[in-house]
Image (tube, rainbow, N blue to C red):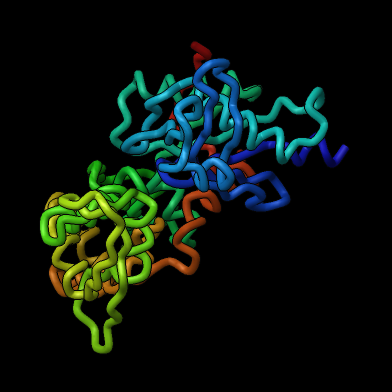
Length: 341
């Protein structure tokens, strides 16, 4: 009987990573949202980590792509194949599994985009699909008391979107979703290396530079690093040395947009709740929360206390997982929309 009860799923369908939480078993899948397809036959060659290794390294007949862009589905069929593959991984007995599924979506999602997410869930084999907004899931996953009448502010910096929300009494009071997030930080590094050093690098290299050298606020003893790429003039491989301060300068524009979103949301927050946030602070979740000094930068520019969630990468998945575990208790945080399209 247990296998039947334990099969409900929560999916954090992210631009950069997809996490699958299985009821009573926790997060079982945490893989990059990448699919490698054979162009001729249309069949899926690899999904997740294996597909990510192929990015920027594929021959003509294979395409490695990210089916989600800016937090929403850009390639419907690839998304559905990816979901199906991840679900098959956690449900060994295929014929048995028709799970209920909770999927996380950005708070700025349009009805059409939301329908696409639900449809992908149904096509991948779900019995019922529910949708929860990412900042709400992030707040629940970070352990914030979302049902109490106090203001909780969460900033979820993902791959495709940054979600800023103030939550009270189990609902979102004010929220802002901007399409500036981790991917834009990578692109800013690519553009800066091109402009300053005449060096072409791929997205994977840019992401590595961001992780190793990236920061949002100056700190003592910052590392320098070497970046390999292709020289734009000679067309030959070349290595340049860059400092953390250089990378911070490259990241300045997207970081400014993220901090600005926090400011605008604070500006729209009712004064009573703003007082609560002053006491409790802002909680950072998502992969972007791992960028060194981001908490310092937001603290410096808003004057609010800022904390990074315990495990920012899985906050959203854990929050959506809580919705699956305590389905009846947390029903109200799910976006109500019961019609099957």
